[in-house]
Length: 143
View 1 (cartoon, rainbow, N blue to C red):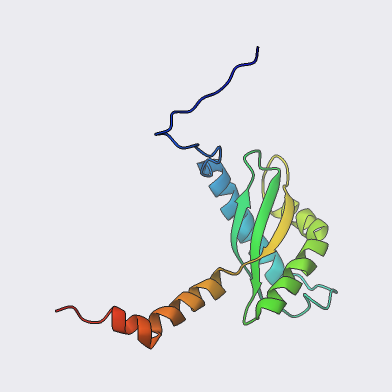
View 2: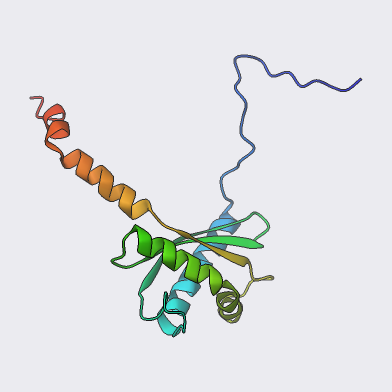
């Protein structure tokens, strides 16, 4: 008969997700700096990347450092530009991985995946909400 795991009702299920280790954080930051330098120096033939200034806001590495997810955004771009830029960077990920291998001293160069970074839009939306008259009225002086 198989074992049944029974958790007490007072203790909710704990997610197996752990925060990133110092090693993951250090590797992610090293990759972020290197990708930023590569994107600033290289000329791309892809029309979606040609002449664009692209910022890499964060790189998250898997625990084994074989995969890295980079959050990117074109400077001064809208949501459509972000999605197009992320797709173009994913098409160029093999090239960028090769360049990254020359820049960074890691045992294995991670496979790169690029996602559009919408954190700037979210921060802008929250600022607009906080500046709205209805919210300012609720947050008014309470002297």
